[in-house]
Figure 1 (cartoon, helix red, strand yellow):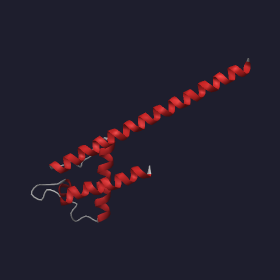
Figure 2 (cartoon, rainbow, N blue to C red):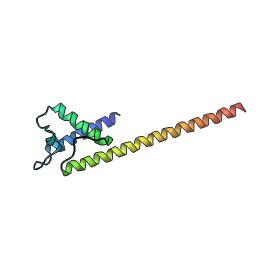
Figure 3 (cartoon, one colour):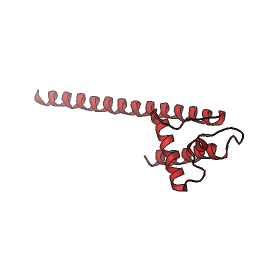
Length: 114
């Protein structure tokens, strides 16, 4: 969980950097939200919330507006799919291990009864 929190922290930083330093000619998600003059803490929390929503595949009102933001958003979505797949795989493996343990325990109990 700590590793995931660190990854989300860094992704939020990259997401905010893309929104505040990117595309000077056009809009960015941070400029569209009016975050230029907002306190740093608010900027961070909005960026983190956006990244968490994107990783989880949840809807968010913050949308990418230029190519680098869309590319990073796609990367975040792919990362979310990989994390979800790993989580489901871990649960499946744990369930299989528990079933195998229970089956061996039942077999031992049956042998003990004989």
